[in-house]
Image (cartoon, rainbow, N blue to C red; front, side, top):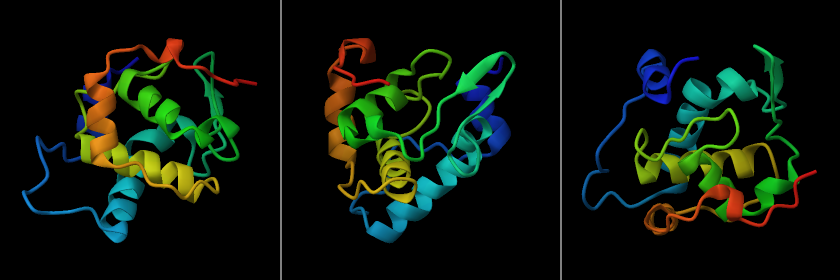
Length: 139
């Protein structure tokens, strides 16, 4: 299984240390960046339609229509820390990229329109509580 860094390199995703100073988030930038990160990294496992899939003996969960994504903090923690077979991305993607992809998946494949901000991601990065301790209404 490829590590997260290898997946990013193979996908050609530009990982930046920081966004340019003064470049505040815009819905177009976040949407475009979120779509790019999803298409180049996430859809390899979660599929283009976000309905999940199986392979190599593992079932990848659907993101589309997933009620767990209603909890933006839970979703962000999963991307930051990984879960089950999913790698962590806290040291692979910038907080802005994580915010963008979580916002994109929650809004594009679900009806959750409240955005996740870079500040939200940075706050959760500072909080080291593992994702398993987050209350989950997993089905």
